[in-house]
Structures are given as structure tokens and as C-alpha cells.
Amino acid sequence: MDVGAVSFGLDNLPYGVFSRPGEPRRVGVRVGDHVLDLAAALGGDVYAAPSLNPLLALGRPAWRETRARARDAAATGDHLIPLSEVTLHLPVEVADYVDFYASLEHASNLGRIFRPDDEPLKPNWRHLPVGYHGRAGTVVVSGTPIRRPCGQRPSFGPSQKLDIEAEVGFVVGVPTRLGERAGAFEDHVFGVALVNDWSARDIQAWEYVPLGPFLGKSFATTMSAWITPLDALEEARVEGRSQEPEPPAYLRRQAPWGLDLTLRVELNGETVSTPSFRDMYWTPDQMLAHLTVNGASLRTGDLFASGTVSSVGQPGSLIELTWNGADPVKLPGGTRTFLDDGDTVTITAWTASGVSLGEVSGKVLPAT
Image (cartoon, rainbow, N blue to C red; front, top):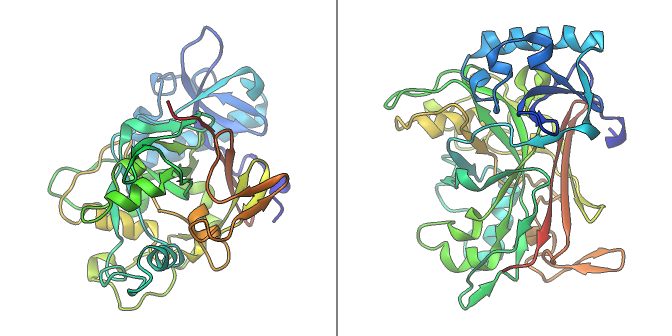
């Protein structure tokens, strides 16, 4: 479907946090090019809060009730504020951030790039969703400028291989206690948001053995201002990709939580890739199950992301698109291997029925 046909109608109603000049932050839902002020339309302290966390903590029955009431309120046309009159903020107080590595194509491509003489995938990759902990404090809302990071590569200086990772993120509402496993995916996860997990590939390549990503990832992760509730994605649910070998019992899928989403990656306004999320090897319910199987607790506001969404011929990162700089991507007026200062990356996504996940965008600023 053409991205121009994507709408923010009553079948979508993604949640965010906004403010008007001189007024406090509060919860709203997007309706077309407007935001519905839920505090004014529905009343209640939970909607007057400066983040979605109080609403997230209430659980699925309350989420569904709020969605129904918001749909009725939006249909009246009252309490709608033009987006041009508001500032959008990070929608949740991020408690913890975990990034997975769930795309077979992405993991295989990076294996071939970083380890050309070895098998692309490590032996554990098909047995569990590989992941790592990021930094919750560096998750920022779409539109926030991103400063080029400095680090060892192995000489110290600004990253020369600044990259993006087009990802799909999942926001936790209902927590778990330490020592217990998560239940059904839909009982814990409130909704879905686009994520760009910015990556300094030269810093990453120097530091990631033996313990994995650290400073090459932790400097910034951008999250969409809008979180699409799971109920808006019912028609996008699909069976997950077949898996061999069969995963352990705790990772076996109990419901279809693959999502048929098309992502679009734009660099300075030019489309460079359109990967498909339905091609991911590990599905988000499996990520959640693995995240808590050891008894690690969930907290309201936890964010876990899929890792780079890549499909055959449609990579979600520049390191794949340019094969680590060997094959530059052509743009009007020049080429790119990795990101230059001043570049703007915008990622959008939508379903076949036209439900949009909004956008996640950021502009690269020079290192300091």
C-alpha cells in the first residue's frame, strides 16, 4: 500500500503525550492531523499525567475501555487540537530498554561482514532470541537531534561509521514480580512503536568481542511519539516464520504474534529501503518469553525492540545496504556509505489495511 494512503483514523488511535505552550504535558491520541486531549475529553488523573505510565499500569481491561471511550470522543470532533499547535514528548518513562537481534537476514548479513571466514550465524542464534541491554536514559522522542558519538575505533575520535537500525519496539504495561515469568503477550504489552537504534559501527566492531554492544549503541535510541495499541493491529497479526530446530517449550508460539508491517527508511527524503517485519525469525511474544524466563522482572514502561528489520534485498541498516561501505548508496547530489553530519533519517511503517505506526526521525549533528 502507498504510504500516502496511510491514515490515523478511528481504527488506529495511537497514544502519545503532548503539551501546548504554557500548559503541562498530558495524554492524547492522534486523530488525523489532530490530537484528542484525553484529559479534557474523558476526565481523570490518569490522562492528565505527563507520561503514559499510569495508564499502562492499569492493564488490558482499562486499555480497552479507554480505547472505546476515546473512539466515541473522537467521533464527536470535540477536544481536538491541531498537531501544529502542540509539542510531542517521549510518550513513556522508559524503565528498561532491551534490544534483540531477531532478523535472520540481518544477523546473517552482519555475520558475513564481520566474520567472513566463519559461519554467518553463531550456533545459539536459532535456539534463542539473542539480545542485550541498552540504556533507558538515552531513549529520546522522534525529532530529537542526534549528536555524533566519540569513542575508540580503535583510535579515539568521532565515529566514522554512524548508522541506523530500523526497528519495531514493544512497550510493556503490566509488570511481573522478580522470579516469575511473563504470561500471555497481550496481557503485558500495551502497544507498538517504531524505533531507530542508532549505531556507531566502528566503535561497535572494536568493543563488541567478547561481551557485545556497549558504547557503539548506548549513545542514542529514538522512539516514535506515538504508540499504536495492540488492538489496532489485530488485522496485521500473522503466523510467525517457521523455525528449525523447534525452540524449547517456553519459546513455542501460543498465538500468531507475527505482524505484517512494511517499513520505509528514508535518508534526506529519499527512500533507500522498505523491509518487511513479517519476515522476522523471532516474534515479539518469543522475545517477551525469553526476556523473563530466568525470572527477570518486567516494569511498567519497559521497552524492548526487535533489532534491525531486514528482509531479502531490503536491509534496515546502512552497513548492510552498502556492505560496510564497499557499495555506496546513490542519492541526489552524492552518495553515502554511512551517515554524514546534517543527514536526516526518517522511518515509517504501516499495515496492509492502512494503520500507520507514525514515524521516527532524527538529524545528525557534528561531534563535540
